[in-house]
Image 1 (cartoon, rainbow, N blue to C red):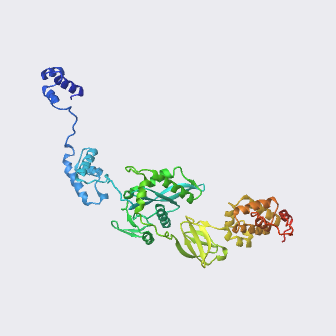
Image 2: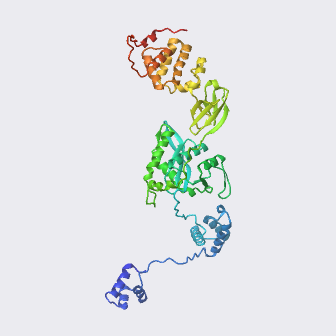
Length: 498
């Protein structure tokens, strides 16, 4: 083996100093043939054989090639792997070589025959304003101090890459439709083509190829906003790889650290700000940032309808004996006077409105999950006043007492002490009824004042509440005597009529 030092010495000695080949032979010990090759050519680099010999595998190569050709007619999931080819050669033909050699030869045959293109990707250049990709992701947030799993909807245009993200407690169809409406409003228009997985909210049945039977409600959404739905092949999430990547990006960036919020509205405001801030980001391979690309893209979008799609589910049901209606496996209260009557329910993604005879009788925030109760205390106060013995054990009162301020507990104790247990509870319920007409902060301020001044009746508290509004100044009539300000401390000395 000739080293670089020897190669340099032989060429320099002959070409620069004019030494003869015979003399160089004596000095180096190399043959004349070798010296002439060095003088006539470049330094001999290592050259890989143009044809691999495979001495042990040689007689099995035809078998391998035959099996691979036969695989062309077999479903992909039942074709030979390199490992399976190796085990068959060992078991059936007595192959004594290594598995590495078999793997190398299988790769070589597949590359030569164009059998394996799964590792190759096409460089795509999406058309401006034509397509967007849609998907769901999952994450957690601290909502009112509780660790809460949630789902987030993501829509990403293929051209500009500007993401829209919105959080929901569930992935139900109504949330899916609501997210579309918010996304179209965010983008200021509708993309002509949306690309989806085969999610249940949109697809009723997957047929062969690209054919799908769509859900009727989804077809209504599509028809209203006038876009075309395109569905990926089953198990081929890479066909909408842009939105798949954004979901991971959102989870790692928009939701780290874990958001601490009071409501889903606050969480969605955080996500919206993050989406807008992301507009300054420049996608690899692009010369413009996301906002610049979107300025060009939004001109190509389908205009929005005059009003968003009414995303409301309607149903009729009966109020049960507990003065509640069961909607989506959860219970919502109505005033007790409507018990056992038929009502109509309008169910939106974030609210439940209950109607009777054309008028709304109750409105609640929507619950998600099963067997939960949404009870409005005002719906039950008349019934509790008729049955004061159930005050301490009534579910609606027990839940409210966990949240109401300490001043109400002190007022209840005062009423019971001064009026007796049953009359005191009934009179205290009259105070609770004031929440229907006055702001909570006004009532609680007056209750504190009443406690300081030993007021022990609901009439006294109501009187204080009426006269505790902003003071208005009126000029007295000429000759009319001035009216003194009432002394509320006198209520403490009034006896209680039993």
